[in-house]
Image (tube, rainbow, N blue to C red; front, side, top):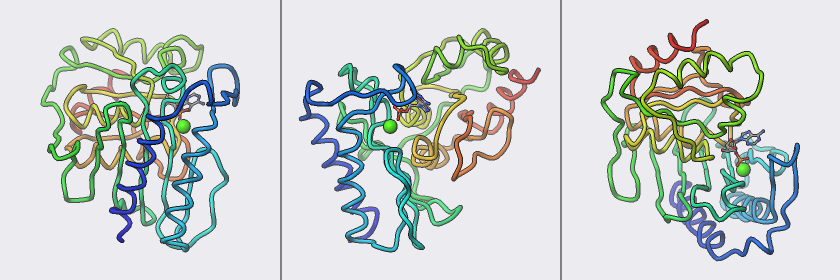
Length: 257
Ligand code: 2AM
Ligand code: CA
């Protein structure tokens, strides 16, 4: 089986397991604090995905959120077993399994499973972006005043005293509306589907965005850091995404001091 087919099957099975799981059996623990959670299911799903991938492709590398990276020389798999753990713990609908496969700086495919809707977002370079069997494309809005902005963490984005706070508030005041799902991967997929127009976060990890960024690009969107630099593949980063390069430039202007 090819990597993509294996990944689709493994991610679908992970979704089945998560929908059947009981939050009461989740062993909820704090990572960096009470707003940053990990559960039995985050670890279990990552283990299952790692085992399946490495059994078929033992030379590949796995970079997942919950375990140290494996050593390998083949393709690199960026895995977030649950993106939106707080939503999962609340049985709130928006959490995802995210699997992005890369050959160095070259994207191979991205898969993001919206678990509660059992909807699979996927993309391969040059093959378009898809939600199950429906082709996706970004919105056509060009005026920031008509745009819907999403950000996964309202508290971190707007309420904490970091250097970007005022600039992000300026962006939020300019757009038509702001929404917060609580999952980097799903919010990027919403942008790819044309359901929002802009996305911003000040903290994202390779396993959060390296699958969905392929989907955004294939749907016609554009992505970078909040400073306008190329989004790194192997490091944690801020993320700004938009429905076009032009909208990205407009958002960067609004974020400038
Ligand atoms: P997670 O659910 O995998 O932790 C909202 O919290 C979004 O930001 C989620 O996609 C979450 O991923 C992500 N995120 C990234 N860094 C985070 C951090 N340090 N604490 C909490 N959420 C973080
Ligand atoms: Ca996670």
